[in-house]
Length: 263
Image: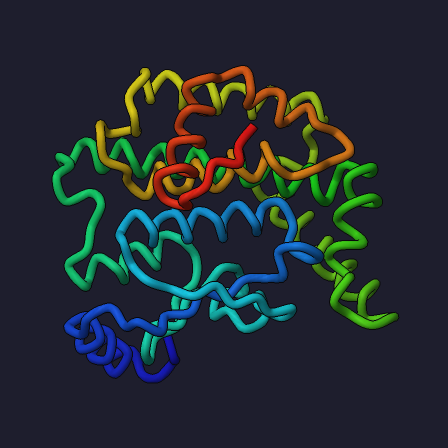
């Protein structure tokens, strides 16, 4: 959201919530073919899935500097009228202010359960994706380094990549992930997938017949892991060991993206 005084921001936010969803909402993300990396692609797909589940119209706009345009420095972000909101949870909250919710029929304990599993996905799947992209030497050299620097001229491409790598490593150190071995990362992913599969328990979606933002988040990460070509495919093979999660990904892909390209 455009910054001003906190009171002014609050008033503008409440007034904006009274307006209907505009037809010209833009979702900004990096270039998908040549630039975007695994964790960013996962988060962008999660937001797209959520907006589609809410039956809200939007246009995807690719920008080479999308993360620098974002108010939080993370992608994706949406421009909705006078508001600029980034990342899934704030976007969900903004949509909720307009009376649109995927969780209105859930009990309070179910909502708490949902938030816990969303935290699990962020803490494990997102950190494992960051680790793989920036700490696994083969993936970094063959995928991350050329893709991240592809939209910048020399020597800015090297400087920007070095800066982002330093930022990611700092985050991974704070979260206790940088010191892990690749096998420990795989073990974390497997435990996370097992926990998600146990919670899904053969249902269509995590809380019954209707999706929530948890389903959107899991779709974004698992679909991206399964479909992104990487030098090391072990993390995708781990996900493939959980048929119920694969079925969820295929269901969201077919129902909300109107195509069936998962294999």
